Structures are given as structure tokens and as C-alpha cells.
Length: 302
Picture 1: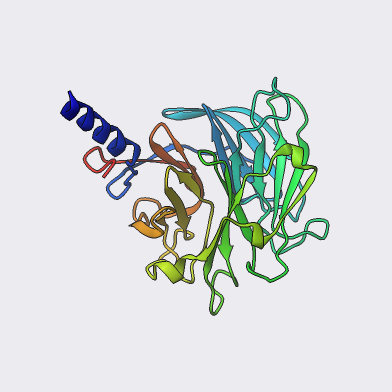
Picture 2: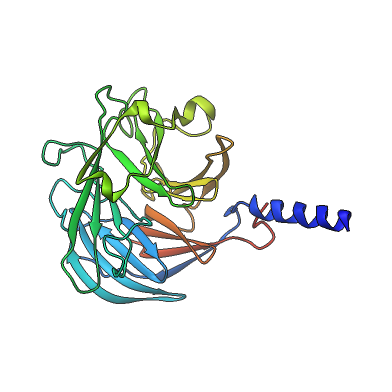
């Protein structure tokens, strides 16, 4: 009985530690996007079978996501719609503004060198729905007096650990001496007020990836990202020979790169934002629509 118990415990631990490997993933197009003309695609968020696609300035399109197609549901400008909002990354959190709301709160990275009402590196928190007008209910800002981030800071959520992760260039994409900084904070609550200022000294973690793993390039075109278990999936590039579409998988626990996967041949389009959906990675692109990456069964979980 003791041996059986130990075996079961080992198997449970092994399952809990499984990571995703997209090295030999199958790559297929889900559908074209039906966004606002002449605005580039940027952030994307998935909640259950709903997908919110964002575009530059804060244009939003909600779809119902199905295995092989997208059902268009609604299109509208966010409450944070402004020329200063690049809307580069999007995530659903856990909190709802009201218990009866259909969607949890949506977190949007401004990600622009232009300031919004005098503020830089803003994370907009919005209440959205399929019928009502969007509401800007909170604004999160990094009080970056030391200039730890350069061109723009992006925000993603680790909902499993209830963390808000800021990441981005210390200078700019192709800047001399550029690094890729990652800062981890406890997730702010809606009750913290309409404006939340985060201080670097309150960060739970703060480091530059290149200091820990030199395989991550100092100069590249960064895009959106997402966290699954202990892994941070970081798509980069614009789908060209000089700036290919590559997926870097950073292990937040081990602080090392698990994988470097070049998808340029399969997806010669600009990667934008990504999120896990039914064990596949869904990637929003510019020019290539919505792409699904499904792990090879023989590689999954290794």
C-alpha cells in the first residue's frame, strides 16, 4: 500500500510539473480577423470561448472562439480609446466589477512612448460586455523614476499566482545596451482605488533576462506574452528575414529559457499577442489572422 501511495504521489507531482513544448507543434490558421480597417492588430485576451481582439488606439472586437472558426459578436472602442493607447497586450483578470458581469475585468497595456494624461507605462483596467458601454474602472502605473524601462513597459497577468508581471525593453528594441527586464508584483485589487501606483521597491522580483540566460537576444522586436504554469511565452519579430517570428519560452521558476522556436517558415507574419486555449497556443498576428499552435503529443509535457 505504501509503495502504491508513493507511486501515485510521484505521478501527481510529475503531472503538476508538466510544461508545454511547442518545438514540433502543428501550425494552422483558425480564421481571418474582422477588425477596424487601417488599425494594426495588437493585444488579445481569451476567457472561456470568448476572444477579445484589440487594435491600435484601443479598438476592440469580441468573437466566439470555436475550433475552426471565429464568430463575430461585437465591435467597439474601449473607454481608453486614444491615440496614446497602443493596446499592445490584453488579459482577463479574476475580479469582476459586479458579480453579475459576464466578463472579468480586462487589463490592457498602453505600451507607447507617448504619455497618457501625463502618465507612462499605464495598464488600463476596463469593464466590458457584449451589450453595454465599456468603462475605465482603474489605471495601474509603474512609478519608474529610475528609468528602469525605456520605450515602453507591457503588463501580463499570472492568474494562477495572482501576480502582475511587467516586462519590456530597458532602452528600446534596437537600442545599444538594451536588456529585457521582468518585474513581478502582487496583483492590485479593484478596491485599491481608481489609480494604483506601483513602486519598484515593492516588486517581488526584478531582473534582466540576459543577466541569467544570454541566449535571449538583447535586440529584437518584442510583442505580447502570456504565462502558463511556470512558463512565460514571449513571441518576438515581425515576420521578416531580418526580424523573424520566434517564440521564446522563459521558465519563471528556473529563470532560464526552456525553448527557442523559430516559426518564420510556418508564419511569415508579425506575431502580436498569445494565450493558451484548450492546450493549444492561440496567436494573433498582423496579416496572418489567428494562428493555432498545438503541441506534438510525443513532446507535450516533457
